[in-house]
Image 1 (cartoon, rainbow, N blue to C red):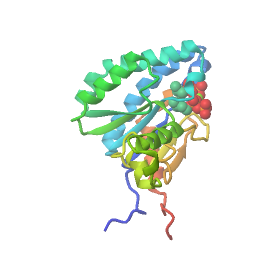
Image 2: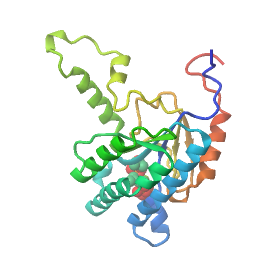
Image 3: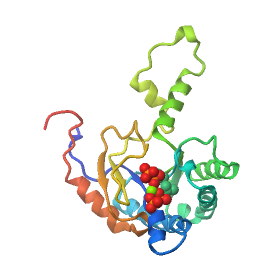
Image 4: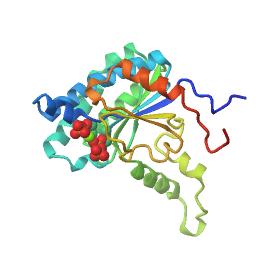
Length: 237
Ligand code: IPE
Ligand code: IPE
Ligand code: MG
């Protein structure tokens, strides 16, 4: 039997891609330019993920709280997401990338919702890596939606108590393994509502480097750090 405490390459890495705005502001550019550069960083990291044999890479692109930003920045990010989902088809095909989505499709502009639906369908058979885009994603929102899906179709007088397995089965992507490693770039040391349920036993890695500066080397460093961790899952050493 395999020993879960022996960690090598993480199967699933989550990344809180933070620091786009600061990267641009430091260069006297508009924050939106940082988001554009962030896409290039994401492509570099996806390619390195494939080289390293990572199976799932969850990228936090827009949180349920990011709607609080200036209207101009929000609509720029939405346009960027829609355009890139469309424009990166060659990248997904050439690199055999499957794209999935975590988050609330309701509340996203129609164009973004349509592009997400199309790209997830068109790339469903690709199997070099699964890139899971967290767009309009909040961990609390996902848990609430999961509970509501579970309740749906049941009558109030036949409501058993919900179990962990029931909630798990109604998450956005129940087939996806929990993240082994969660990385946050940009220096902040917080989770900001990312994969709250799934993060229960994730190893955390905080990098001061701003997301647009990230390269494959940064991902390799994070994986090496992870490979030296001893995971207990509540058991004994
Ligand atoms: C992360 O970069 C990207 C999104 C939240 C969309 P930020 O835009 O938060 O960059 P900073 O933290 O302001 O530098
Ligand atoms: C987290 O970054 C969300 C994403 C990277 C999409 P934020 O910049 O929104 O997080 P806070 O507000 O600093 O916690
Ligand atoms: Mg930020």
